[in-house]
Amino acid sequence: MNWLLLDTSCPHALVAIVDEKSVLAEQKMLETMQHAEQLTSAIEKCLKEAALTFSDLDGVAVGKGPGSFVGVRIAIAHAKGICVAKRLPLVGLSTLFSIAAEPSLPEGDGIAIIDAKRGEVYAQCFRRTAEGVEVLTPAEAIPLEVFETFAKIQDFVVGFAQSNHITHRREGPSAEGMLQALQVKIKAGIIDELNSLEPDYCRAPDAKKMGAIPGKA
Image 1 (cartoon, rainbow, N blue to C red):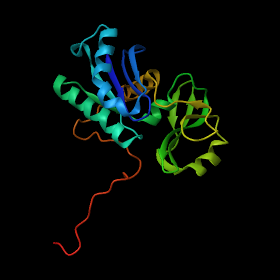
Image 2: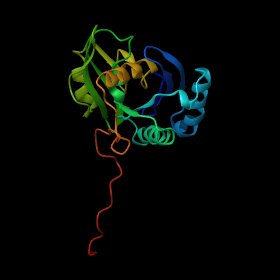
Image 3: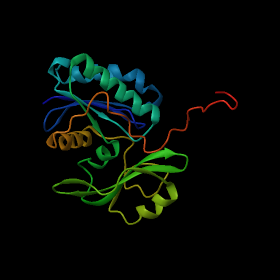
Image 4: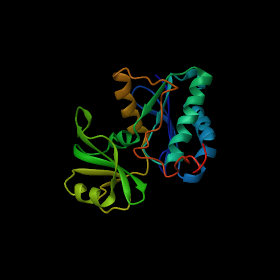
């Protein structure tokens, strides 16, 4: 099994190639405004580092958010393009789950967060045990002050936001975390349809569709 992993939903974007158990190659993109420009080059570097070609890939897994509205779309669009061109299966991964699945995190109940701006965070609760990662709540956008109160009773808080309660700061998922999330999907036999996989925004975008002009049919 050789899978290409993509996630551009967070400030630190990631491209990686993994097999069943390990990371073969990875490229981190730390310049948020350049993810779209750097993505193709990062994929090429990973393939070269892993001594593989697109023909050696068994599928593509992409972070579907939540996170930056533009960033989420960049990776999904790129992943779909590769899958169509190379006839590869596609799997969408929750960015929050991938962050919470980071192997270096401790066991216990915790919360993964992503800065949602506007005084909010995208948040989701998880339980980490020796058997794996269990989802406790759905992902949602909540006010930062609500998170601050709830964070005090957690065993761990992982992610990024303007908060002093983060115990493990991560500005994007790691390749190891995405691999863990992918393994869960593969074990469950979940493969997404190219046409139906959509970003998980967790809230309505800031830009709204314009309604009908008053007085016009």
